[in-house]
Length: 375
Image (cartoon, rainbow, N blue to C red; front, side):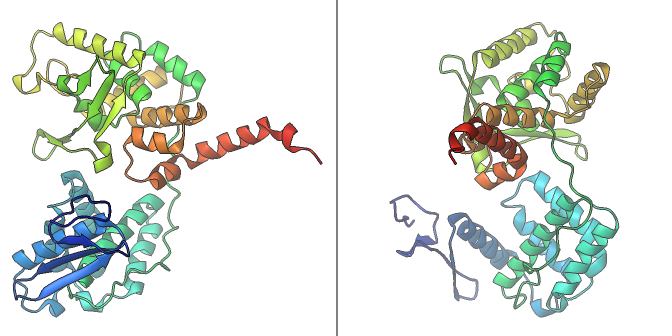
């Protein structure tokens, strides 16, 4: 294994140059040395994993004649080694619903930028949300870039000039106002999911992360909670699936406030009163007599409470958004918030909560307006 410029170990096959670029290398099945340079370590790791998997598993004799449908099947199998099952499901759904019928039967070498733009334009005509259209572009770019790197095509037809700001504006994730948050918390007293809703709001957890909390993840002495798994229910397989958080940054340790500690202790006490708990779920904190609770049950029950107290219906994710908004309003730095939310990139935090940051900027400027007005 090589080391980077700071002396940290790198994956086998990857080195870092003095220019700070990462170089990924491997020898293909024909004995030919393959290599590529990258600015980012993660990009080098991904290329190396994808290329080696394709080289080992491919039996393509005439790749220049490969159709888009055939390539997607190869590509999505490769991605299964590095992406979460839920992401694979989303990518496959996007391909089948929006890409397949437009270019699926075309040869990879025949696909041009105008064909890809046609896919996105057709989606806009069908009133798809802008966010879905952007995700479709991500899928297209990824599958064609992998084909380019493996000499299936000469260039990637997905260009920066493509129009993606089309379609219906994506729904904004609204946070509760402080007044509505107080109303909700009062209405939740005694509710069967009271502790789940409140913990998400004061810790900013994703729903799958909340469901995945085990007793071993909690340290009352150190006042912290380790997030190291997420749970997802597969309706096709009729069972729960456990996996790592959404990204590497999702594996994090969150400080526990006194309120959070009180909530967790009350939930644990509540669990002790359960008469029956399925043996496979005995280590999980947020359970009922049937085991873990599905996402939909949480959202539908929460919306029922909102309707009852006459506030806008929300989902569990709105509670996470409310947490982030309260943190920003209190003056927390966006970098700290990024870590607490488990975002892999600061840009993600800024993109999602930019409107809240903008509001706080205006408030801060108004505070110092008298001092600035010296003319």
